[in-house]
Every structure is written in structure tokens, then in C-alpha cells.
Image 1 (spheres, rainbow, N blue to C red):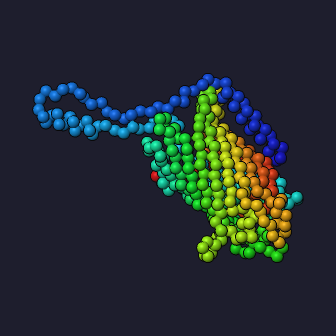
Image 2 (image 1 turned 90 degrees about the vertical axis):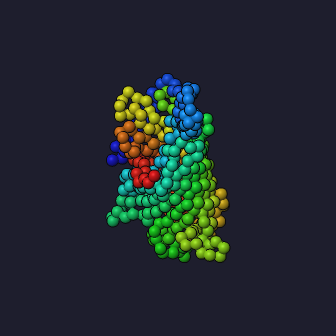
Image 3 (image 1 turned 120 degrees about the vertical axis):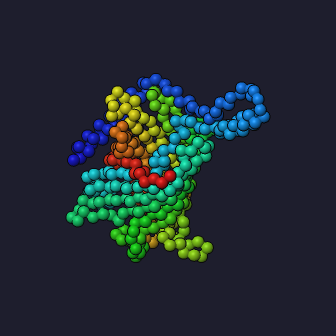
Length: 368
């Protein structure tokens, strides 16, 4: 199984390299947008007679003038680009926290529902609102094949898209989200000397604010789309103005988890030009995300936090996605991740891991 796993990855990397080489040798593409003004032609022939006819023509002229309409291939908004993905990966891999234990699999399920969406309208500023959920699962290869307590996340997101006035291309995207992350457990996570990882409660509410800038570059048959983003994440304290906030993270945890975080992101995306029908128009995407905890961990009496200077304060993900042109949102990915583990109460662990598996957009439930 392990040899097959390595072989599949090698084939994937080789194929991606060949397609990139093919794309770079193609001629340039004209990416100029096509802006038109929807104004109907008015017959200006002189009237031969009555005042009534002149009045009718004048009224018709007032009614037929229409506002400018933006027409640009780059004005299309692809919401899944900014949403969580569904992943299935690390089959028959080692579990990072137990020497003699393997993973059956890891998975992230992320369906989404569109509450509001007017991004197809010909306006300089459009918006959308979505609600999505995530479930992170780790299954261990032991006698009972147990699940490590899963992570459950819920996101309510608002997106604003700002187009360029002259071209109609989307240049800036703004995202504000209210989020919740928990492991579904109810026991006290604070033990006498260490965290209760088996059934201890992990729960937090947080806000995120992101700004993305988009630009495009000609490269063969298909242009390359680039997104650069910066964001801020704020975890809500367990009490505000003297009132307890249910579901928020308690201070002993948040002092070491990190309430205030900054995010940096970069992605490039291109469709591949190829003589092979299945590969022609396939999507190749590279992403890198970096998170840094702004506040210094404080440590306390718990075993996990006795040396706060070694607690992880960053998270780095570098990922390549490849989606063949088979009329499906399903594809393959490989990822190198390092830093703070994002699996609920395991945040105090430094994790360096190579992941390979399947990725899909689960953006299928819509209401416009």
C-alpha cells in the first residue's frame, strides 16, 4: 500500500510538471475585457408632422437609454475559491502522537449553503452570504478503530466583491465571518496535571476579517489568476462586560492557544492547455497560508504548558491541487503542513506532516 501511495504521488507531480511546461510554451492570450454600453439606437429622422409625433419620439428616447453593463470574463465570481474544501487523505499513514499507531484516514467534510448571492449582477460592488460547516475526523488503526474526538466548525460568512470601473474585473474581495469550533465533548478539559484529551471540552467562538487582491497575467492559452490576502482572527473571551459567554474558550486555554492571530495567504490558479482531451482545461492551483499568534503563550501548571516558549505560535500550509477536466469538482492534492495542530485540543502540539489525497468543492446547496 505504501509503495502504491508513493507511486501515485510521483505520477501526480510528473503530470503537473509536464502540463506546466506545455502551458508555458503556448502563445499569449488577449485578456482585455469586453465592456459594452447597452444603449438602443434612436431614429433621429425629422418628423413630418404633428406635435404629438414629436412628443412620442422624445418620450421613447428617454425610455430607451440604459445604464452601462459590465461584460468581462474576469468579472465572474467563483465562491468556492474562498470556501473550505472537502479532503480525504493520509491513508495508512503514521499517527503523529503514537509511535506504534497508524491512521486509517483523515478527512475534512465541508458542505456549504448560499443564503444570498447577487454576484452575477452587472454592478461594481456585489455581495454574497454563506453558511458552512466542517467536520474534521481522524480514525486510528487500533483494536476498536476509534475516532479521535472530531472537530466541528460552523461559519457564517459575508463576501463583498469590488470590480474595476474600467474593465469590470474583480480586483478586491472582502470577507467577514463569525465562526465556532468545538470537539463536542462536555467534561472538564483541565485535569490535575494535564489536559483531558479523551473527553475534555474544547470550544471557541471567533471572528475573521480578510481582504484579498486579485490580478491576472497572460500565460499561453489560459491566463493565470493570482490572489493575495491578509486577515485577522479574534477569539472571543469567555466573559464580556461581566457576562459569561457560553461556548467561548476559557482563559487557561486561550492564554496558550492564542486569541489574536494574523493570516497571510497566496494562491495561483490556471487551466492547463493540452492535446489530451481529459487534461485540456484542467485546473492547477497552488496555495500557501501562514498564521501567526500575536500574543505570547503564558504557560501554567499543566504538563502541556510548563514550557510556553516551545508552544507553537504559527501554522504553515503549502498545497498543490489538480482537478482534471472531467466535469466534476473532484481532484487530487498534496500538502506540506507545519506548526500548530488545528485539530481542536491538540493545538499545543507542533506538527510537521506531508499529506496526499483527494479534494472536492462541496458548494452544491444554493439559494439565490
